[in-house]
Image 1 (cartoon, rainbow, N blue to C red):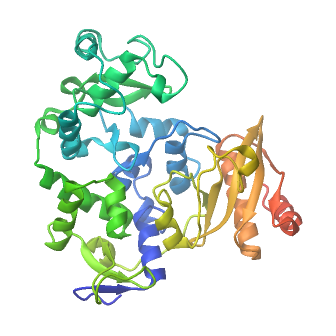
Image 2 (cartoon, rainbow, N blue to C red):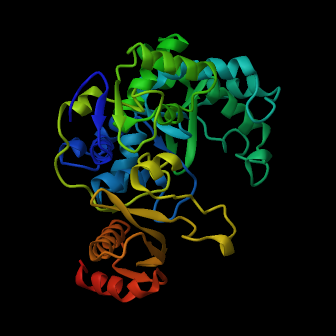
Image 3 (cartoon, rainbow, N blue to C red):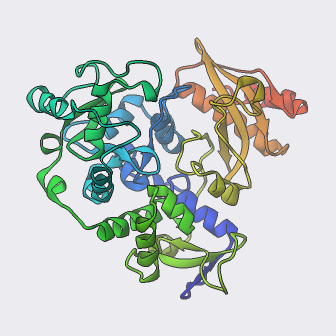
Amino acid sequence: MNVNPVTELSADDARRLILRAQGFLGADSRRGGVPALLPRLRAVQLDTISVLARSHELVAYARLGAVPRAAVEHAYWDEPARAFEYWAHAACILPVEDWPYYSFRRRAFKASKRRWHRVPETVDAVLDKVRADGPLTTGDLGGAKAGGEWWDWSDSKIAIEWLLDIGEVVCTRRVGWRRVYDLAERALPADVREAEPSDEECVRYLTRRAGQALGVATRADLVDFVRLRKEHAVMLDAALADGSAGLMPVRVEGWGSRAGHGPNAWADPEALATEPRGRVRTTLLSPFDSLIWERKRTERLFGLSHRLEAYVPAPKRVHGYFAMPVLAGGRLVARVDPAREGRTLVAKRVTFESAARAAVESTARALWEAASWVSCDDVRVEVTNPPDLADSLRAALAATTP
């Protein structure tokens, strides 16, 4: 890697730097186990879908293997607060030390005086109840929803979520899958809670952290990591241009062009300082994993167009309800739509991106490791695409039985 004012990187160089930054390449990238995961990734997306496990658990599993699920929960949600839930790329678990730097978003919510719903007049009463009786779940506040969808939220649910948006309350732990809300002044350390950086300081800090987590990223990747809009995206541009974000300009082969021969991406200077070494994990990936959560970036890195089909009508699904890409050798070699039946992991559909023997064998290993993690002792494949790889996959599964 030739480090100039604009560092030139091959597409393979960039991919390996990204895999290391994301915790998939080499032993050093996984050092520290589960407690080090969130500080490294800076954001772990949450989602209600649970197939083999919920996505935030799958993110840890993908990097660290068959870690106890209780250890994953402990690393995210425990006392004293290690993390909080808030809006970044989407609804995410974030390191507690990043709380001050989302104050730009809390201020924006306050200024807008609304979220997706009209803020109910009962909001002050809900805050008073949390102050008097908290920490509380939505059940304690009078029910999570009046119906089954987000637009049917009860006034209590709308109020408590608004209070979370503006920082009056915070979620630093869950009970089961239920958020536990408490006053920020009770749940957060004073030094974290009382800091109030400017919008520009927030954006600079979060841009640097996004760059570290992603390893190598386009401007669009950085904006997407925190979902910056309008004036805050302009602040990101300024922080990249004047160097205050602490990221280095790079030009990645095949990543598209900007004007002249300038950068088309940005990189963490510490990532550029050493060559990525070691093996890449072979594993199933949640569709919400930060390695692949943005479709254009996934296409750029791996040449794979992947979308979540959970909300696509079943007859129109191509790869399955919760198709999980298989990472092997630094590539995405297949997609698996998993389910569980008792102690059997069922691959309802396996779609190969390559007919290579290595792709089939890697998929078999990934299926068995996932099965072991969720306490299954058998793997069954229902549909294979292309169909002529079905026998090869079954033979590979038989040959790699734990």
